[in-house]
Image (cartoon, rainbow, N blue to C red; front, side, top):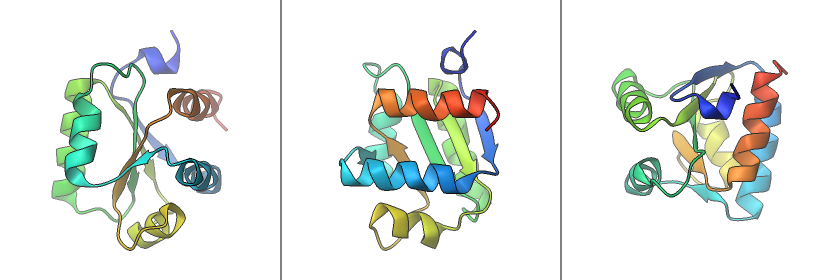
Length: 120
């Protein structure tokens, strides 16, 4: 079974630089989703089969639990960047403040999940 056939996987990343680099690329190609309402719509979207939510490590417990419950219900993969703060995540995405974001490109999500599956 491929990693993107499983549902609601939570990954703690030790290789934050790889993910931050991918976020920079996704930002330049305008393939990121930010904002609470936009992220909720993205998570609920049944047309996209492979989805990924990325969270900073210093998100409050309530917000973390809210996102994790939503992602588990809808089968969305989650990556928690252990070494990345909200400020770092926002800087890479070209925003002022950001605690969570989604990637809107299924091929990019597959690439990220494949890298996680290989343990890199």
